Image 1: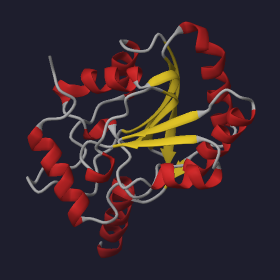
Image 2: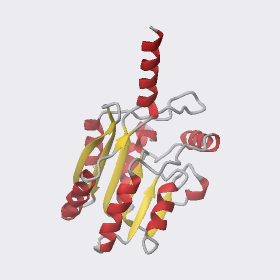
Image 3: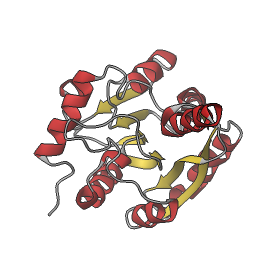
Image 4: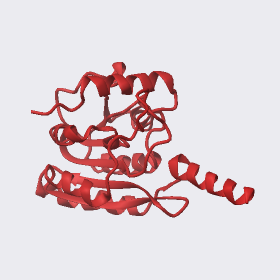
Length: 225
C-alpha cells in the first residue's frame, strides 16, 4: 500500500517552506473567483464546509474564512507543521491548488484516494502542467510530477466517477494549469457542472512563473542579437 508522501519528500518540502516565504503562500490562481463561487453555493445551502488540501502556508483558507465567517473552513498539509493534522471528518468541498504536481508518482493514487475520502460532495483541483521556478534542496525541480492533461484526467477518473475540466492559460498563450471539478458520486453531477459553469464566467489567466521566466529569457536573447 503506497503512502501519500515519503519521509524524504516531506522533509524536502518542509525545507523549501522554511527557506522560501513565497512557497505555498499565493493561495492559488484565481482564488478570489473561487471564493465568490463558494459564497454563492454557501448561500444556496450546498456548501457548509470547505477543506484546503495541501494548503501550504494557509492563505486560501484564511482568506476564505475572512470572507465567509459562517463557513467551516479546514486546512491540511503534511509538510507544514501548523496544518499537519489530517481531518477526521469529510468536508462538502475539498480544494487543492497547485499541489498534485508536488506528489511523487508512486503516491498519486494514494493522494487522490485521500482527497476523495475527505470530500462529501465535490473537489476542485488545480494542477500546474509546467516546471516550477523553485528547486528542492536536492536540486530537483519543485514540480516533481509533470504530465499532460490527458494523463491527469485518467488518474482522477479512477477515483471520481464524474468530472469536468478546462485549461488555465498563461499570459504568453501557453497552457499553464489544468482545472478539474470532480464529484465523488454520480448524483452530485449537477453540482459539478454548476461549479464548472460558474468558473467559466471568471476566466483565470496566469502571469510570471516558469513561462514568464522563459519569455524574459527569449526577449533578452533577441535584444542581445
